[in-house]
Length: 415
Image (cartoon, rainbow, N blue to C red; front, top):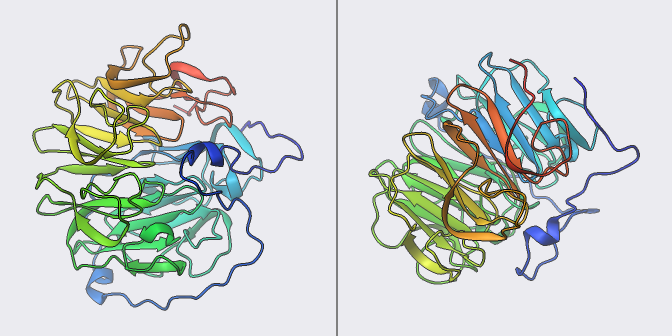
């Protein structure tokens, strides 16, 4: 499949410092030596014995600068930044401007993307991962990177899968029994096992014995989950109040989100998080410097605040500094940072830097699902076509160009 590569160029996290603006940490974009303690993990035999019930398959996923989609033919394609093989095609191109088929021939029902790696889940719950692995985020028990899918988790069967981070990445999944496992970087306590020092290249159980319906590991250094009873929990870095517990102290194990909200879903992004109640009411908490909480202000909150407008949403996704949500009618709304037109809600001129309240995505497309990255967003239309908008410097919009799009453009996926 046609792609464009920059000869002699090594792809690195060129926008690392922008992603972490104000955090006061210089990202580790290159590692030369790494002391690694391999973790010997055991698995509950009952979690391996039967095929899991895959919950809410995710056919569209977005990393920081790349995107992936499972087509109607159950083939998986990725495009955009190909850091250490995150596209999964085996290609060493630094940037891929049109979708490429993920190698290996596996049929995935769920995909999950982080800035530097991607994972997929088969119908019988076997996780595969590919891309950068210096932090152990591929779950292979080592730190060897792979440009094509490899089995993760050494026999672990999962019902859902999620990945995230900001070049300190990790992956998490949930089993049939509701046990959550995470692996990769422990930065900020984001693995939820009580450790913030030791890299875990193999899955380790999240502490607390909670039964999760789903976990979202999309935060830069934090993750959140909803239990089967509808309670929200978060763990990891809390410097911006993104755990929603009322303060800014880090937590290395899951802690309940304040407010006693009953949640249907929860999403973690850069330094903020959002949740939906069963009635579709959206709440967000954490950093709000660019309006990503959607409450009409730029004041952060360490506890959940309702999103302005009183709309009922069916799903919500969180990017680095922006948020998008979907109504039952398929109308997409976004709010927060618009520095790269990732809201998809404003024409090219005049330039609008941000929105502190939800604004509808241009184009009149009825969407079935959404995904949000660092500076771009994507959606699957109800008719099946895939669209993306926002930053396109690495080809993450998949339209064959490197041109930023202020409204949805169609991804060049095979029909």
